Amino acid sequence: MGTIRRAGERKFVMPVKTLPSNAHLDHLKHQARDLMRDVRVHDAQAAQRIREFHPRFLKATDAEVFGAGLHLSDAQLVIARERGFASWTRLKRHVEKPTLADNLSAPLHERIEDPAFRHAVDLLDQGEAEALWAYLKAHPGLVRQRVLFEGGNYFRNPGLLEFAAENPIRHGKLPANIVAVVRVILEAGARDANAALNETLVLVCSGSVARECGVQIPLIDVLCGYGADPGAGLTAALVHGEFEAAHELIRLGGRVDLPAAAALGQVDEGRRLLSTASGEERHWAVALAAQFGHAEMVRLLLDAGEDPNRYNPPGAHSHSTPLHQAALAGHLDVVRLLLERGARPDLKDTMWQGTAEGWAARAGKTEVAELLRSLKQ
View 1 (spheres, helix red, strand yellow):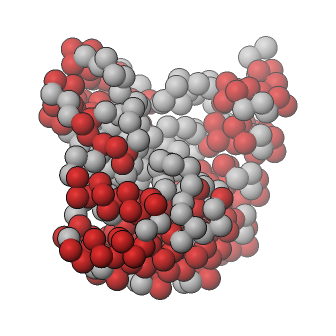
View 2 (tube, helix red, strand yellow):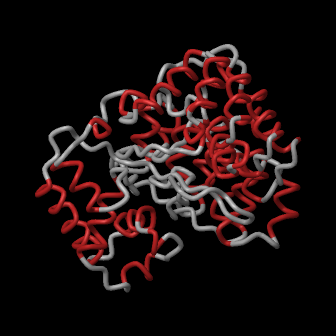
C-alpha cells in the first residue's frame, strides 16, 4: 500500500494480479523480459504498468518511461509489485521458501505468525473489549506492532487498529461494539500513532462492511476525534463510492479539492478550482467525473485540455481509462462525450486486457456495449 497522505498528497493503491499457487520463478522472469520488450516498442500499456508499480516513475510521462533506459532489475521490480510484493527478492523468497504468512488463499488473520498478535486480533473480532483491554495492558507493545502480508493490493503492513475496519473482508461482519473495541485500542496507545489512525480511517471510509453494519460514520467520528485527518480518507471514500462517508469527512473538515468536486458533480465548484488545480488534481478529476457519470464536469476538464485516452492515475482504478469506467457504470452520456472528444474504444485495460465494450457487456450495460460495438462496423 502507498504512503499515508500528507498535505497535498494522495494515497496510492494499485490493483495487483493474484500470484497463482503454482507460480514458477522462470515464468516470472520471462514476464519481466516481455515487459522490457514492450517498453522498447513504446507500448502505452507497458508505460502505465511501470508508472503504477515502479516508485521512480510514479509521475513520469510515457516518453520519459520510454527514454529512461530501463534495466532488467527495473522490470523485475514491476513484476514483483504487480503481484503485491515489495521487491523481486521478496517475490523470489515467497516462491522458493513459503511460510505460513505466504498462504494467499487463507484469511489474513490466519496468516499471522505471531501468536500474541493473533490472539489480540481474535479478541477484536469477537468484540471482547474488556478482555482486549486487559490483554493489551499485559502486552503493551502490541498496539504499535505491525504484521507483514504480501501478495495483495493493500493491507500489507497493518497494525492491530487497522483490523477493526474489516477491509479487506475477513469475516464479512463487525462486532456490534466495534466502536468500543476501537476506543480500547486507541486508549491502549494507538492514539499516539498518526499513521495508524489515518490508515484505519482510509480503510473504514473505503470499505463496505462498516457501512453495512451501520458503524461507518461512528467509526469515522471516533477516529477523527482521536486525531485522524479527515482529508486522509476523503479521496479513498470517493473513489469507492462511499459518499455518506465522504460527506461526513467534509463535515469534519476534509477539504473539497478539484477531484472531490468532480466526484460529487459540483460543476460550479469545479470551475472555480480548475484554474489553480495541479496537473495531478486534473488527472484525478477527469477519472472520478467519468466514473460517476458527471458529464458536464467531464466536459469542463476536456475543454481544459485533459486527455481522454490517458490511463487513470494510481489510486483511481489506474488499470483503466475514463472510458472503461464510464462504460462499466453505464454512463451513456459520458461515453458519448468521451468518444466525441477522441477517446479510443480499442484501448485495453492493463489487468484483464479488456476494452470498454467488454467491460460494459460484462456489467450488463447493454446500451453502452451496443454503442461501442457499432463503432467497429
